[in-house]
Structure formats: structure tokens, C-alpha cells
Image (cartoon, rainbow, N blue to C red; front, top):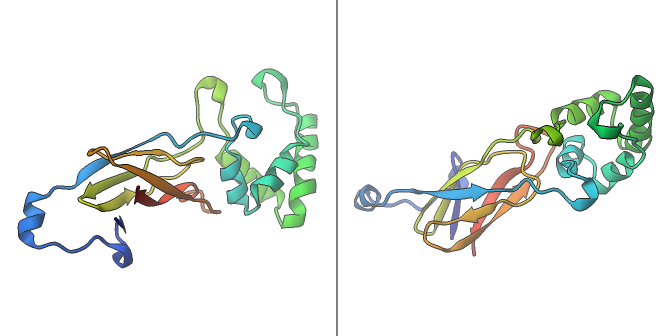
Length: 178
């Protein structure tokens, strides 16, 4: 099994001679799902928000436990917004999180599930030739490992990476044929 990240020479697929490459075409790998959240998070992409803030998931969960959401999916009033922000920052400020950082991460991943929305994400793509899988686009916004389907019936698993950069937070960093 070989993993090749597009554009990364250190992990590139094995070279092949021109006769092999002209007869063997890369086949698209099916990547689906990957947007499951933990039951304790009530549909929130906590893993993404916590990573964007640079804090452990449990710290963000503890911070969010002090928040009182508005009823019925309505936006909370300004007084409640202030109380919620204070509750969040009480837990997050000791980790160096500022109000602006909290707003940036929260606003980026804000969505309305009741309106059929999900948080921002981009789909990953990959191809396979023989045993060489090449990630052609790592995607972003995955909260759980997506299902990887290879065209020949073999199975594969994805490794997801989280970090502060929202452009790459929740991206696929590896696909392993099992």
C-alpha cells in the first residue's frame, strides 16, 4: 500500500515506465460521509471549533456547557449573547483565547441544521492505481472519518487531521488500504 499526496514528492507513488502508465489509468476512489458529530455535542462540530481555537475538545465542551441557547432555534437576545460569551470566555481565556478568536471560529462553523445546512466543508478526492492511493484534494470540514470505497471491493480507512487553519481543519491526511 502506498499513499501519495498530490504535489508532495516525499510520499509520491512509485514511478512506472511509459508502457505501464499508458495502459493503467487512475480510478477515482469514492469518499462519502465524514460529517458525524458525537452525541454529547448535539450536532455541533465541536472537534472543528476546538481545533480552530487550539484547545482540546473537552475544554470547548466544558466552555459550551455554560451557554444557554435560545429556544426554538431563534437567535438569543443581546443580554443572553453577553452571558453566553462570558461563560465561554471564562473557560477559554486561560487557554489564551480572545473574544475575537472565539468569534472567528464560532462564526466560521456556524450553521442552521434546522434549515438543512451543515458547517463549511469541501469534499476530498482521491484516485487509485494498483496499491497506490493518491489524495488529489484533502478536503476540509470532516468531523469523523469518511467511508472510503475502492472500486475493486477492498476497504480503506481515512486519517483526519485537525488544526487552527480553517482551510485545512478536518482534512484527510492519509488513506490506508486494509
